[in-house]
Length: 235
Image (tube, rainbow, N blue to C red; front, side, top):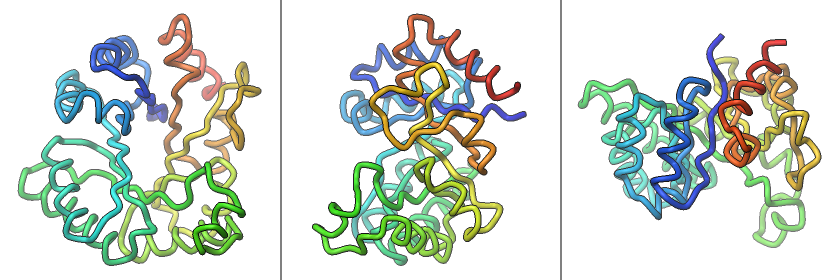
């Protein structure tokens, strides 16, 4: 079975990120580089992680005019990342530009195109938050609307909360890959994160990738923590 665990390197320094990568590369499917680490360490951290042979999920959630997003995506392809994110709220033309840039840049470089992932509604937003910014206050309906938009634009993946996996699987193509944050192994399921699922629950509902940060990175023995999660999945 393909290892579905993506470790979120939500750490402030390149040194810490590389230490975790070296420890965990053999027991996870990839590493997420988000805004904190990328801002602190820049593109070089992606090059260093790729230099270790690891898969990189660049989670910068591009959201701008189509041309700007296309150029940012092309730059990410030159870094040889395997996944990256855009906000579906940028509209269908922006999403089409992102996917086209990913495909065309990869073709020119002889790379496999990265999986372009559409982010629908951030898990920090609720009905009140959506109303405040003038959107449909029904979170599920808004997620479905944006997921369909991403599909129309040709995106091949989505980032969604655990709560939305089952419903999205009913309305999107079976080939669409779902990347799920908010995953907590059973031992820490009661921490401060809400709307969580265990790894087995998320996979059973139709998740393809599980983004896991603190339960692994903050553990006394990160490798042992990752191995325990893998064992939970395999049981």
